[in-house]
Length: 337
Image 1 (cartoon, rainbow, N blue to C red):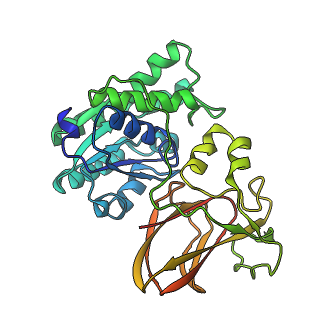
Image 2 (image 1 turned 120 degrees about the vertical axis):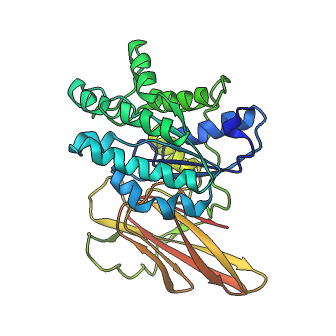
C-alpha cells in the first residue's frame, strides 16, 4: 500500500464546483477499496464557486473539524477566472496546507485542472509553479491534473461541458485517474457511487408551492402529498445529477428547471426507542430548511455543498416517532449519524 494511504480512516476532498457533488471522489475511494484498502469515511468538502480565499475561510470547519487522515485538494479555477492576484492565491493555499499538515493529516494537492479556452488556461498555468512550491515546502504529494487533462484532450477525450470549465464524464475520469496514479494505484477505475451512510430516503413530498428568494417559507400544503420515488428521477436525469440520487438525494422538489419560483416540502418519520441526541448530515441546493418535530433546526440560503455531509446539526430526538420536514427548491440530502 502507498505510504499516503496507510491507516487512512477519513479521506477528504477539498475543492470548488469541480469537486462539489461530483462522483469522481467516490470513484477514487471505490477503486482503492476494491484493491484491498479498508474502507475510509469519505468527506466531500467542495463548494461551487469557491476561490482559494473562500476555501481558506471555511477550511477549519469543513476540513479540520472532520479530522481527516488524508486530504486531496485543489483550487485555482475561480481564482484564474476572476483575476485574483497570484500572490493572494499562493498565500491562501499555503495557509490551508500548513494548517492541515499541522493537524497531522497528509495532503495530496492537485495542479489546477486545465480549461478548454487557451487564454483562460494561460492564466491558470501561472498557478502551477506556486502549487509545486507549496507542496515541496510542506511535504505534500502532487497529482498533475493539469497535465493529465492536456494529455487526455490530445487523445480526443470529451473533458469539458459547454462552458469549457466544468467537466463531462471524461473529466471526472481524468480527475480520478490522476489522483489514483499519484497514490500508486493503477487498477481500473470503479465508477460506483454508493449511498451515503445513514441516508434518509423514505420521504413524502408535497405539491409545489410558490417561493421566491427572500420570501418567508410558505405554509406546508394540507393535501396532495405523495410518496417520493427516486427511480424515475434516476432514469430521466443527466449523468451529472444521477450520482446525487445514487447517494440518497431527493430531487426534484417541484422544480423541473431552476428559477421557476416554486419549492416543495418533504417529510419523513424517525422512530427511536428512547430520547437521544443525533447528528443530521445535510447538503443540497439553497434554500434548505429542516424542521424536527416542528422546530426549525437548520436554515441555509447560501451555496454550501451539493454533497450529503456539507453541513451537520445536532438535534434531540424524543422517544417514539419524530417528524422531520425539509423545504427545498431542488435537491437535498439528509442522513442521520
